[in-house]
Image (cartoon, rainbow, N blue to C red; front, side, top):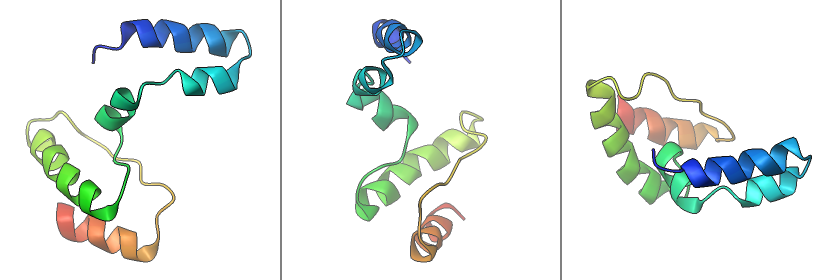
Length: 80
């Protein structure tokens, strides 16, 4: 994924008990690559990329957390 330096920094902070610093060291770009976050419109747009990736086995599962019933409906309509 290309975040080796960040991974080392995050791990160093975490192992030293500095969990807040470890969280702060996670680059926004990494979060953007591995998570669907943001406004509904952005997530729907990004889901298209995930859907394409799933067709070639780059995505085999998704963890859905902290969503409302209406969010799940949008997700289902977009993915299915």
